[in-house]
Length: 145
Image (cartoon, rainbow, N blue to C red; front, side, top):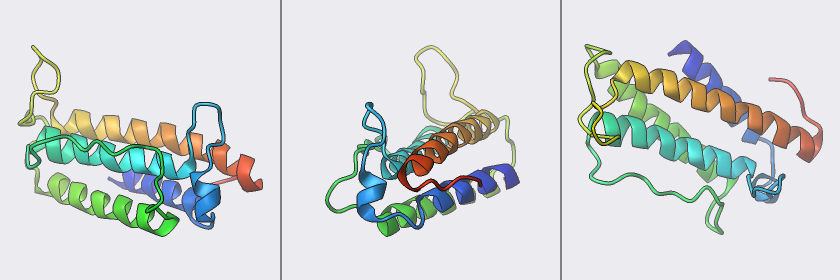
């Protein structure tokens, strides 16, 4: 958990201090923005832990990674932190990291266990934290952790 929490903190740090306009402006031709990456990470955690592992949600989160007029840096960070807390509670309640989740994710395959979901979430968060590093540097020259 320490590694995942470290990465989550780095993601929030890269978004913090940006204006809503800076955070929602795509910095690359694909349309990726700092705010959009954090929205993606929020829905990814909820989809893996809440939908796939516990099946507490009937449907997957389909959040658009494109910021909308209701999004702000503060609201996106708050949603991300709330998702982190919800997922952490699921992790802490788990007594067997190897037990399969309750949702079939890939047809014909067993549902991923929490161990796989944790490793995947760490990998996904690390990859997107790197993207955020680049986007933040392009916005204001900020570098580092």
